[in-house]
Length: 109
Length: 419
Image (cartoon, rainbow over all chains, first blue to last red; front, side):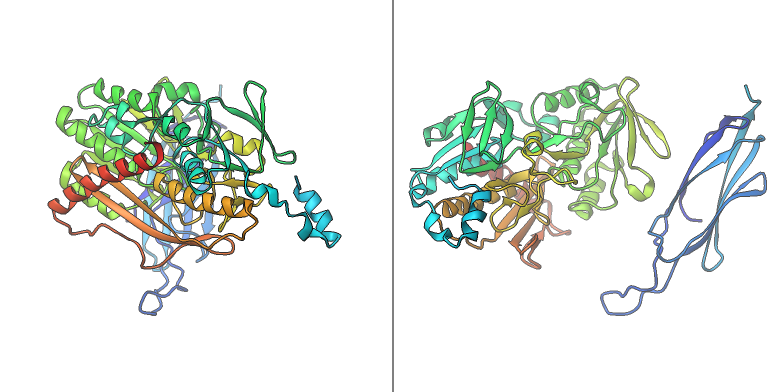
């Protein structure tokens, strides 16, 4: 598991647009660089990010070598029902980092 | 006097050479704005190089409070009065020291306007305004907020305010430091400060902690600082960088909270070092670019944006050279030579410059970095292999010797500039 940080409200009103920010520690090594001995540094990147809201994908992204180290991904999600937000990063070898946050949704005012 | 506009006209007529005003060689008129390490140095150096020059130094404050070693004031090891210097020696050298702010520069007419409305005419203007804190850059951080959450990034009342807040902090409290992205004044300064704060806490408030929220992932002398923190202060200092999401995005002065994208930290003392830009007069003079700093021709420090204006010290974009007191002094000496030569109708010389920065991790534990720099066509670059940093595995004796050097570095520099 990589170190990941999430910013999402714990509580929201139904229909509210929530700002979500994520940051994961990852070198995103492109595979195009060489070390001091001239040897190619192997590619090591995250290839996919997904946010699921009560099992349903609400935001997905495909990541490529051009994405900088420590990808910071921010997006918006509309609060609907109480439940679970899952944040899932998958690397090129299908290793998965998963973080879950509980969300309480109050009825619209 | 020939303005650049006229120069071009005369050049076009093919008679440029006959218009070079030889009479200016003996009695040039130079105005320097800003009396810090850069400005005070250049004013004195100009008079040393040619005592027929008329040199005016415009500086609002009668007493200068130096930043280097001011973290020792925060840590309780020095008095603020030990940081303070007058301009008496400059006056004795024949520099016309004017203690009021410059409020405007008209590069077309070669005029500087003072607060009292008087104007000074110059042939060459040297701007050394240092930094201004960017009060728009960090949400919630303005001049009023700085009275509660000191920046202490200009030495003086802010320095003692931070010191006093540390002294009166509750037992086991949390000191939060916010560090901006580069470039800013004194690259290793925040980490020296964290060290000396930790030293104070270890002695006086041992359960208290320092949390550094940094907008970048690496910093000057990082391995040396990290290992020194470990050995001297254990877990008192925690550092988080950009990849940890530690970039500070907002502060709340009343609640004393500091926020990143991912959390809001409750501080007992918050030292907010905000993003910075060249001093205001540089903006008024039209010598700043979109970065907020002043682009220069490397060899002469002349502004790329306005004629007959040179910019030195923290305000200038000197690329690889850090914004340090030593660099400011070195740039001033070279700039003085170039301005003197230009006024004599001579061509500028190619000079290399040195910078050294000492940081005190404790009063008896010093580390240093030195670099040698050369001007290229567009930028100042560091000469590979010419400088260096303190060794990683040095003994405590070596660290103590370097700490003593740091003290002498300060004494030598301030003697040269102000005594």
